[in-house]
Image 1 (cartoon, helix red, strand yellow):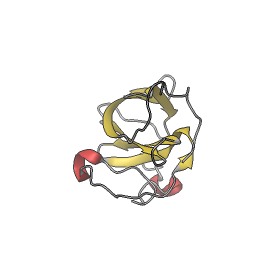
Image 2 (tube, one colour):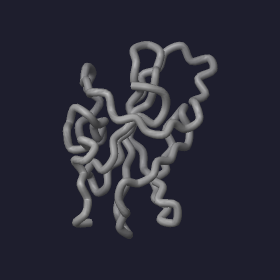
Image 3 (cartoon, helix red, strand yellow):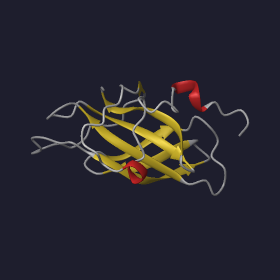
Length: 128
């Protein structure tokens, strides 16, 4: 993993990635700069939802054949991104996601953690 450059997308900068909520908790008022845009997945099913503020960390899985990291976020469903690095066997992946916008979400930004270190940060649904 010597060719890994985790700072290429600013993933180490606390202002550009979604925090690991399992480590920092869910404090109100935390602000983060907009993350980098990525390929948007299918839109969320928000039928009947009038307001939504979502902050969650979920487990993720890696498929070495497709180089995809996949995870499931409540309401938004299953999402996948292309991994920026090769994931070693036994590596622990976690995806922390947070909605963007005020009362009505405009997007979903996510940070992928490998063994507790951010390796990807970006908007996966909508616009932040």
